[in-house]
Amino acid sequence: MQVKCIDVFKMLLLTNDDGVYSPGLVSQAKALRKVADINVVAPRGAQSSSGMSITFHRPVSISEIKQGWYEATAVTGTPSDCVFVSVHKLFKRKKIDMIVSGINLGENVSMQSFFSSGTVSAAMSGSIIGIKSIAFSKEIPQDHPHLYEKDFTIASWWSAKIVSFLIKNGFPPGVDLLNVNYPLNVSKNTELKLTSMASEVFEDYVVGRRDPRGNRYFWLAGNKKVVPAKNTDAHVTLNEGKISITPISIHSIQLQASESVHKHLSPLLGGS
Image (cartoon, rainbow, N blue to C red; front, side, top):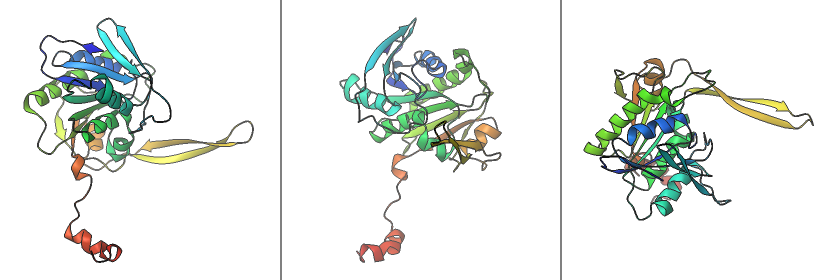
């Protein structure tokens, strides 16, 4: 379902992994509709940590929702499903100029989050098929019984400013995806900083228990590390309280078959 704005520059697809009613998504939709023509297509319910999972084992259904100014399409699937359905069916005859994902309820910093987050993976799904994409996430309080649209107002203001800049100036050369993380206490004066991804921010652990019938089951969890490496997305967002912008190139994820790689693997390759 389309959300109109007065001055239409580009058509953006807006999605997330926290669900179509997430306050971060609704707040961002309100801000972005002032700078672009947006279409909101998001999971019907929470799909956190779903990564780039695609639903092939069952059908997905869609439904249109409308609450005041807010209109969206809810999908009974993952964030990547939302991108897949939008590109290949809902807007097949239109051109999606950019995929915007978030604002995610919680930061998505480090490679651990980058490859597991549904919000980031939705943007990655777009990048892989050639659509420039950007993911937005925000650090939230550890004890957050309730979050509201107003809690994301300043972050959404920044999102609109960043997206507007990209609409007018394009993405940097060689960059397919931007991963943006807002600190807990973001303001209109918060500094932006280019970063690289931290390797990890969680120390993972598994808790084993038994149910009333004696069967074993496990809880997978992780604790945040206290001090991530400097100049990484984790350190800048969580320790410095600045806005982290991490540029990603799909093509640089795989190394070129350089001479040194050929030499190292020559016994395996048979000297080819």
